[in-house]
Image (cartoon, rainbow, N blue to C red; front, side, top):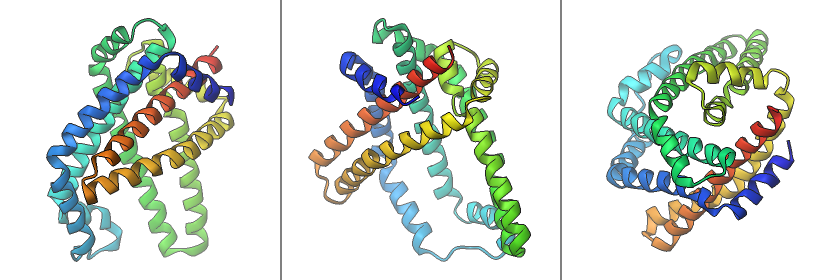
Length: 260
């Protein structure tokens, strides 16, 4: 499992064409954010500094959404679209990692899989909404009953973690094995069945790497927003593209070795 990170790093050095799909994904994301960036920032400032229209704690998330429908809707649509673009890049990188042919063929493969990527987005949306409801139920129980609430919340958090680990490799399995969504879910569930601890360690290490590089990228992007320093946005773009390429390559390498 640990050597997956080394293989991913070597893959980036040996096959620099792997950066192409994450680069395209970054360009698409940058274009979208260019047109909605100001509205998103104003929306977030409105949410932060205006009086929250929350009157009933038990239905606070619903009241929050109804209180800021345009702001939340814009953030949701943009976030969902950018997540879909990143999934597209993952499909291209993982396919390129497996086939080791031309990056154009892998990019074409990812374009051909867009219908499945859309279904994958819908699947993740349903799962995340269900897990969000479970998490909120746990928060409510903990708020109204100390001991029982803590126990129930811990149980719910473990269930949420378990579900996330079981579906974490659905996109990788679909890209690597060229599966549809239903087959990808089954394959990912089977893949994670006896590897939960290994997967936890894998994502823990990957998270540390992402925090280190991702924080730097976020800092540079924030600096660009404040000062319009184009050197900062260029460095942020490079860091983001390298990080995405590494993440997708590491997940593909781990899946390829562990699924043998």
